[in-house]
Image 1 (cartoon, helix red, strand yellow):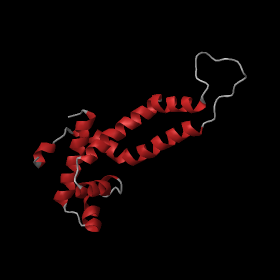
Image 2 (cartoon, one colour):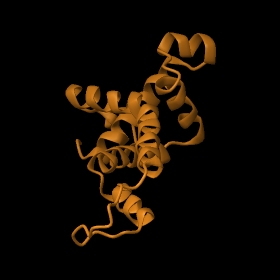
Image 3 (cartoon, rainbow, N blue to C red):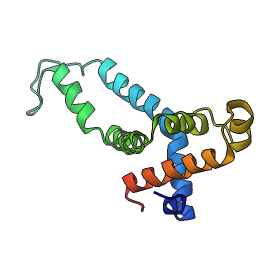
Image 4 (tube, rainbow, N blue to C red):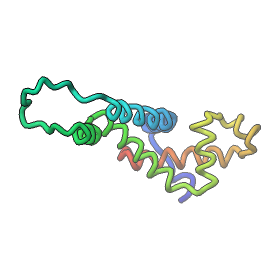
Length: 138
């Protein structure tokens, strides 16, 4: 696919760029939300029945992990980004991390990582395009 085929409207590009920069924070946030549910203690019981809920705390936690709306949203975003990353070759994955994890701009990447301007922007545009496709924006 040629470079010109990775065109994305500016507003979509900014939205996707933000999602890519937040990818690692979203992974940490998901782990924290899951750990919070797992580590939570069961609600105290005074021996009285409570509706039709299960009395198995492990099952309750598993249900919460699968139904918590905020967890589902973060999982979906992570899945979209991971699907886009999977489409990159190994060199592009490395450049993706330099751009979005290490937050190197083009000049820093060229100076410290010896990545050419063309390679930097081609990978940048490609991952944004692939992610926009995953999010259904293109």
